[in-house]
Structures are given as C-alpha cells and as structure tokens.
Image (cartoon, rainbow, N blue to C red; front, top):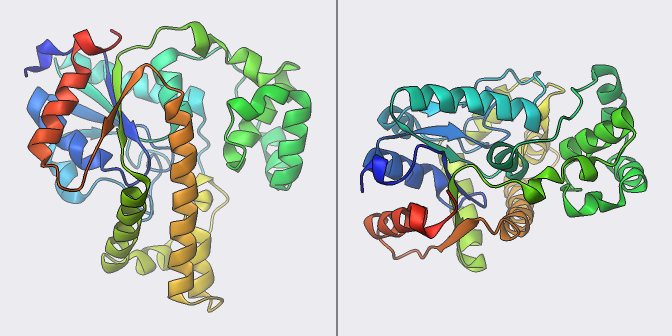
Length: 308
C-alpha cells in the first residue's frame, strides 16, 4: 500500500509499554514512506536510552526519527509544549512529502496532538517547585478537592501529571478537567491503532525486555547517569536500580520491583487507551509474523476503516 493511499494526516501507533511499537513503526515507515515522531514523555529526554526503551541504533539508522533525546533532563515539558514540538516535526515531514507516524505510549501527549488543547496557562516555575516538594498524596488531595473529575482524566499515580493538573487549577481558578473537555467534542486529526497483547504475554515481554536491558549494559547506564531533579528522575526502574547500586537491595529484587512497576504502568496505559474509541485495536500474538501484522495494521489505518 503506497503512502498516498493512506493520508497526509498523522498516523498514530500506540499501546502499552513493551508492546512492540518501535520495531513495528519502523516496518510501517519503510513500507509507506514514513518518518517517526516520538510520543513517549521520557524518550524526549537525553540519557537513559536503555531504561526508557528508546529505539535501537539500528532502528534509528533505518528510518528518520524525530523528538528523541531532544530535551535536557532539567527541561520541563507538558502536553502543550509537546504538541508544539510535534506539530513542528510533522510539518517538516509533510513538507518532504513523507508520512508522519506518531509512536509512543504517553496518552495525554497523544491526545493533545490528535485533538488539540484548550488554552492552558504556561508553567509557573515558582509554583511548580512548591508543588514538586509536596508528597504525592497531598498533591492528589488538593487536586481532587479543586477538581473532583480529575480522577477521570489524570493518571493520579504519576506525580508529573498531578502537578501539572493542580498547577492549572491554581493558576486559572477553574477545574482543569473542564478546560480539557474540548477533547470530547474535537474530531481526531489522523487515524490510530493501539497494539494489544494478552495480559500474560505482555508481562512476559516486559520480563524479556528487562533481561535484554541488563545484557546491554543497563546497570552501567544507571550508574553513570547524574542525579537531577528533572523528569527523568521518575523513569521506571531508576530508583530501584540506584538502590541496588548503593547496596540496599539485590539485583534480583531491583529487577522484580522494576518489572512490577512496569506492569502497573502498562495497566494504566491499557485503561487510558480503551477509552480512545477513535483508535482501532490490533491484538498481537507471539507466533504472528511481522509481515502479517503489518498487513493488518495497514488495513486498520486505511481511510475507510477510521476517522479522517
């Protein structure tokens, strides 16, 4: 299927962590003349390439990739800034007559790009610093007091999202959920597919990936990564592996804790994407060949199967 048989609007390939988005996106891009735009909040940042599961060096060489390792660990980023970065990258891709393929699992960033954002206030560094110092439970309490509906659209286990939602409430005097309701009425820009696996298979993939990370030098990567107060400090597995490197836990315990946290994150992602009815699900199996998966993916992304 040629690129022009799809659309000039972006295509979205998403799903839970470890679902195989990066490798399938490369195969899709090669097939349709595409370039890949990152939609993973941690992969935007420089450093921790293994821990954040960035595309491999071989994948990066096969197809142009955008918005990977473009921010310093100290930089702040929210959905509004991500949307602007992604729009610029997509415009450049389209100017070359290529197809933009947005790949990642950060639901709010994907939604901001596909459906737009209400006019939200820019971040306030002073307020953000104060919020960052509060315990997560206190941030959750304040947010739900100001915006009881936040439980429906904010991942409450993620401190960065809670801080940003609370910041919006405090700066505008309005519930952030009300400001974001433009999502509900906006038509999506482009079409998307969510990769899905049976629960046990996904958990096995998470385990296999953690072992591959270790074999590729994950401990050295964590040991040499400097302490910082930025977003990457929240990367899944960083705290657990640092505790092991300080002699506070065994490697087996650290990896088990990292995998457990990854499974919890995958569950939250699944909950988010099940609400995204404009995206088509693609259930994968371990025995299915890549070519067959790619054909299914192309069928789901064709204009007649989804929203333009």
